[in-house]
Figure 1 (tube, rainbow, N blue to C red):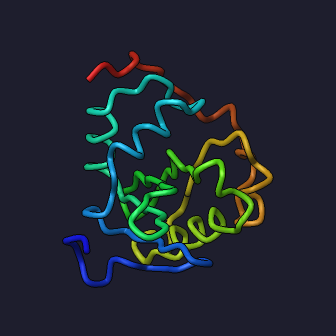
Figure 2: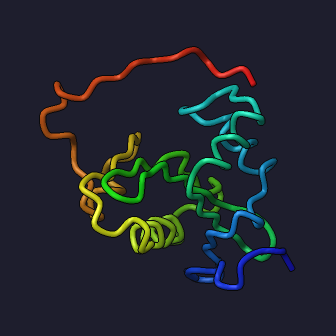
Length: 150
């Protein structure tokens, strides 16, 4: 049993639990996946830990094993950015990624936001949830920073 909030399990899909309890997050498992992902290759574990500490996080679990994750950066008033989303490769196609996203979008802290943003290599997966290409992408700017080292 994990120490954490009593209401931490917010959803269940098939035989998987979705939880927003930070005490259940398994930093080593999250880091291992992100380390080999297209979005954050080589990211240091300390950076992942700091990002988790400053975000709303959702874990996907089969028993005690963490098999998926998503992080939301938000002011809980007008804007959210969903990022670092993953489901273990060998568990895809079971509807659990859909369940994870549904749990995130149903979280009352994210209700009524003006914008929810994400970047993905799989736009077709997110389209049924109302995600679409940016309107006026020329208005969106990016200021790249250095690669995190700690």
